[in-house]
Image (cartoon, rainbow, N blue to C red):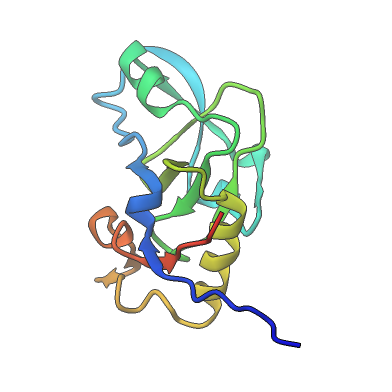
Amino acid sequence: MTIATTAWNDTTVGAEFEVQLGKMLDAAKNAGSPKPYLGNRAVQWGQIDLTAAGVVPLTRRDMERFRLRKGDLLVCEGGEVGRAAIWEYDIECYYQKALHRLRTRRGYSPHILLALLELRARSDGFSDYVTQTSIAHLPRDKFIELPIPAIPS
């Protein structure tokens, strides 16, 4: 008996996901209505700590641009690079610049990418994509080039 195998090709995070950094928080410049937002510390591996949410004033344009949708993958840009969780809520919330928000372009599962990111983080697999001065950062331009397996459908 022969078992057929399929070799997976690589794709990139940027090919499979729209990647956007969150709202820059600046008390002197932020204006608008107070809204709940998430920062880096609210995102834990595979879960979001809603008790860590803050409030920031946002304009209508900010609300359109930075509102979270169910199924969005939030990935830490700094600190523990790559730490990620999926937004699974039907409540209004936004996110700050310390987080990348990923939305699938072609149906790539955010759950699969979450598992791949955790595997990479635990095996120092971000080292070629991280910039570091005082703390590690995963800039968007490097993150979108991160190779991931192209999962056959």
